[in-house]
Image 1 (spheres, rainbow, N blue to C red):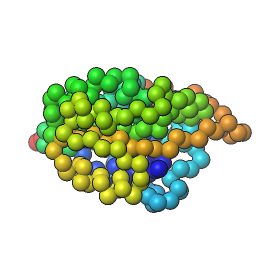
Image 2: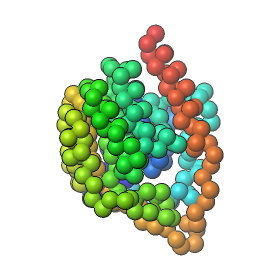
Image 3: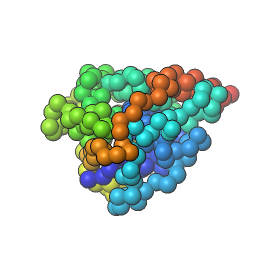
Image 4: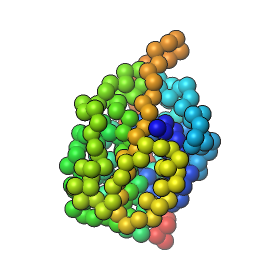
Length: 237
C-alpha cells in the first residue's frame, strides 16, 4: 500500500497543465512537493517510504499553507477547503468550462462520503476531460485524532462504476499507480480511481501537539480561484 506523499507525488510529477482540485490532506502534501510555480520537487521513490516523514500532522503544516493572495501566479490548483464534500462538483464545473484541459480531482474518502450524489452528477454530464481520484485511507481529520470513517471498506470504485463513470478502478500499489496514471489521464472520462493509502500515524509525543490551523487555509480557495481565473484569461488571449 502506498503512502499519501507517494499518491500525490505521482500526480504532481506528471499532471502537466491539467487543472487540479485537492481536498485538505492532499492540499497540504501538494504544498510540500510543489512550489509556487507548480513544478514537482522532492517526489519520493514509489517503492520507498521516504515520503512519509515527520511533520505530516496538521499541527506541523501551518507554515506550508500557500498563498498571500491572488497576485501569486496560479499553479492551476484549487484547494477545496472548506467546501468539504464538494470537490467533485468543483472539478465538474472546471471540466465543463475548460473542455480542452484535463481536470484532476484529488478527493478524500471522508469528504466524498458526505456527498456521494456528486458521483451521479458527474456521471450525468459525462465530462471526457475529468479524472476523479479518491484517497481512501479510512480516516478523517488526519493528524492527532485520525478518526475512522463510518464504513470499514466502502467500495468507491464500484459505486462510481454503477453511477455511470466511463472507467473506474481501485489501486493499492504505488508502482502500479505510477504506471497507470498517464494511461488513465489520457482516457476519455469521466475516469474514477480509488487509491488505497496508508493512514498517517497518530502523533502524540512531545513536539507533535495539535495546533490551531491558520485562518488563511479557509480563504485560500477564493484566492486560488481568482489566480486561476487570471491564468486562464491570459491563456485565452
